[in-house]
Length: 116
Image (tube, rainbow, N blue to C red; front, side, top):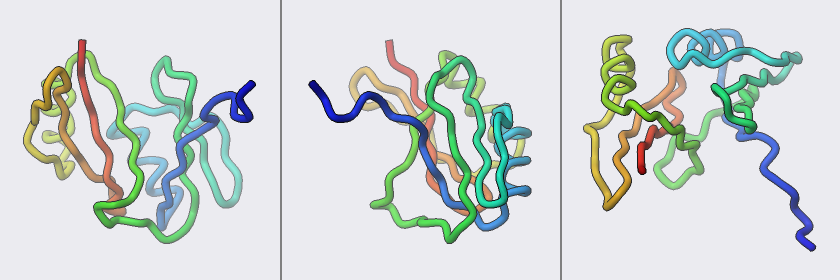
C-alpha cells in the first residue's frame, strides 16, 4: 500500500495573487476555482490536478520545480502565447516529446509539451 494516493495540486509562488490569477486566466485560459487571502486555486482544462498560486517570493532559478502542461496543438499554443507577449523559448524536440518553455509575470518557469 502506498502512503501517497495522488498529487493534490501544483503550487507556484507569486508576488501579487490578483495580478497573477488574472494573467493565468487571461493568457492560459485557466478558471478560478477557489480563493483565500494567501492563495488561489485554478482549474486546468479537463485535468484533475489544479494549479495553486500562493502569495510569496517566486523561485526563478533553473533548478526549481516547474509544471509541464499538455497541449494537443502545440503550435497554436506557442503562437497564442507569443501573440500575447509571453516570453517563450523555441519549440524543441526530445525524442517523442515536443515542448517549449515559457515564463509567467513573476519569471516562474512553465512548460508545454505534446507527445503521442
